[in-house]
Length: 538
Image 1 (tube, rainbow, N blue to C red):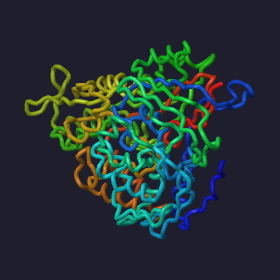
Image 2 (image 1 turned 60 degrees about the horizontal axis):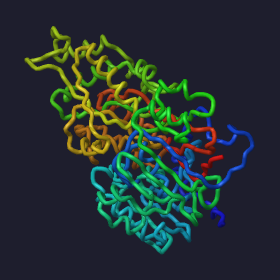
Image 3 (image 1 turned 60 degrees about the vertical axis):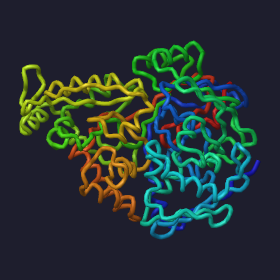
Image 4 (image 1 turned 120 degrees about the vertical axis):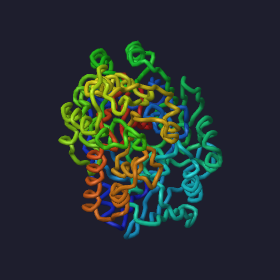
């Protein structure tokens, strides 16, 4: 098997330093071999993994739901990878790269001999085809589109050298190339419509190949024979250990837990708090890791008449008891939100004082805004009740109980809330269409540029924010090549979002999986998703 070529560090040191900021992460339990003595890794077998939902799409470039990313991530490789322990960007399909002085040009030197599962070769032209097609992905491609916004051109310099040029400095882009959203697909897949890619899947160069997709039931993957170009972070060279991966969609947390305990499945996602005690011993290991990025919370449609008033938004912010929700609903160790970013995100700022639970303050803000208490407990103004709808989607077992608590907490200060459930596959179209008051969700990314992707009015602007100095801050942090300046701008952006209540942060997402102790080396990546190349059963 070929050894990985030596890594040539970027010539621009300040950007390298920026993108290797340590990401402090927590874990409980492990997927290493210590759980069952000194058994040696062995090839073969099928891993059956029960997940709670299906996003209705098997294209990595379009999928945003963790439960679907677990599977489809295994089918594509990325230009780079990110070390989950240090945040450092390391080689994968690109053996090295060069970045110019102002971070407007990124030149990637590709590994030779990489093929897609249809036999076609990885070339600079294929990478160009991928990046050129991203703007055409539509509503489901928001993450990939955000990472590539401001691209001036992508050029195939020679068969194994590709250069991406931006109109202005773009400090976030190197980390973006490590994400599943910019996973590289074959030219044949790139030519398909976004809808075709969602339903049929894509041809990738990854360690596993999509064999069957039955929407809302299962995703089946098979080992890619001849695979020999894994991430430099992986311990095994060449092909994966496992022959087959089966991801079964099992919406009920209790049923997933029971299936693991009975041996019907080998691992489960979204372990509910109620199931922790039963799963926390014997032949099961609990794996936990806090997700970086935008925390779970309420995305606010700032164009809605009731929500245009900053006092109403700030009242919602103050009325939410984050600690109660984290302690009551979420897995052990889940932290209340202390900013719009999780504490595991580079350049996170602690704004816990701004997010303190204060029902009296919430009531005072509503009074000042003219909303008077009614006999039924719901406030009114000018004959209109203060009622809002929270749209949510069942892609995590904690969503409904968390929102039922939010509903109670807001009612206690006089805000009526209706909970509106939709299908997971409708999430992106709901945001795009704008037919919502508040929407429950989070976005995982190990880089603070997720604030620009989520809240810039110059991009999709799903939350209908007005143009303010927030645009300057989020655009500026992506453009600056000064690490201290970027940290300052990210801090400013967090303060503007929280203090203006453009978003209502609630809890940090902590990914919690339960894994049979016969499963070894099932590891989290930097985004708290999983990589299964090194995983084996024995």
